[in-house]
Image 1 (cartoon, rainbow, N blue to C red):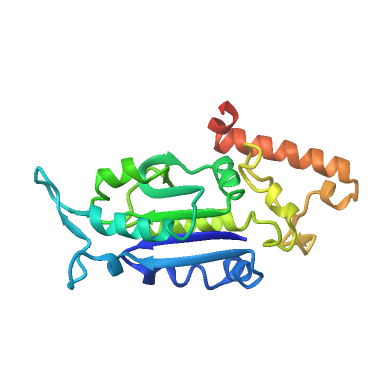
Image 2 (image 1 turned 90 degrees about the horizontal axis):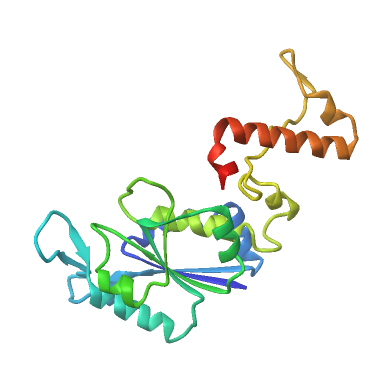
Length: 226
């Protein structure tokens, strides 16, 4: 079983993503365990303080060392983590190969940033990997954490009803997925390509590869450069 712990100041934001669809089934099957921890249980005072003004001045609060260090220390005392991951806009870009790699791990600890981020000393002393879901800024790391868990969780054997489905997803082979069709064969005069109705699996696979290559050239040529 894979286990993922998440440290956040807003645990309520992570309630819904893990209680439905594939993530719910993964937990019910005993394939994935997710625990969300409120950072405020390690707050520095009775008011639940976990942030403070930044040294040197400037707008925005910073998540403090002590609550985060205490939280990480408490969790690592009970479990050895393969990675301690900080979700941050200036981390490495999340890619399918990275998701594939993380899905092979057993224990992950995710830290959700908030405000102006976390004290740099936590990043240098505790964090083993920093991940960004894109070149934009959100109000916190909770949504990126949910995205990361979903991307990882669906790759765990047994989570998908058809495990081969994940192997043909976009980005698995640096190509976008080809077009897909379902019933009826004709809708408002728009027909399903004849090749998909031929029953010739070799020709169908060749067509899908050609379409994936064409779509990638048109929409994401940078993937072919990679």
